[in-house]
Image 1 (cartoon, rainbow, N blue to C red):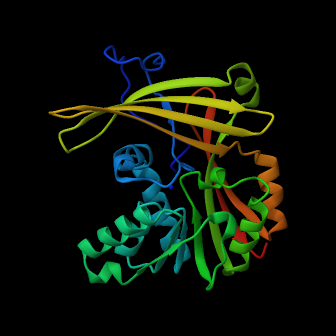
Image 2: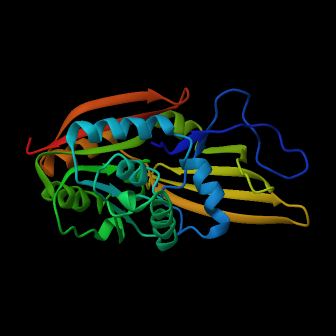
Length: 284
């Protein structure tokens, strides 16, 4: 949907259920849902838990929008985590996502705030790999590590399409999770357990099993969720596949698309991974 490919959530052992092993106490990076199959209503809380807590990146992208101006293109918008706050600040935003349920939640959120926000929001249902844009933008966002949801062979075409629809001097901002390859080779399987924050009277826990395939440069994550309400307990399984980003290859693809990396910011997530933010200028 900075998010990174993960988010820090409360972690503790879950004795009643056969969950995956829980790492030692401290900050834990749980993998995110960038390329999960289209979300249904049951997945909304998990989706928001994995993508929503990164308020710092929302502020950062709002600051970037104030510097660059609009209109703004929000790619992989989800339910409006960035698009709606941008519209509240007066920016015209086109939100692109493949999931119609997420786009409906976005429109509902904007309408609930009021016409001054909803009139600034345009939603487009599309797969990023097949993106065809119709207007130009001052700022394009591939936030929430959405670049890892695009297959490597489709990524150059997506970057060219974005660059071709940026106004002169326009900016593409994207983030991704960088892994230390030797650590992935040594530990290709990881597991986390965490509680999903909910406010509807249901208690939900999730165990994430993360498997890296270095030969295919891909990552597969399976979520085993247990929801306990007043009358019943429900178990669900969801999975997502995404791609490990090779920083050197991504840099080369950006240059080939006519995008110049102006800023590169790194934030350490744990001893094995860091979040990388790139701000790229068109026409460089």
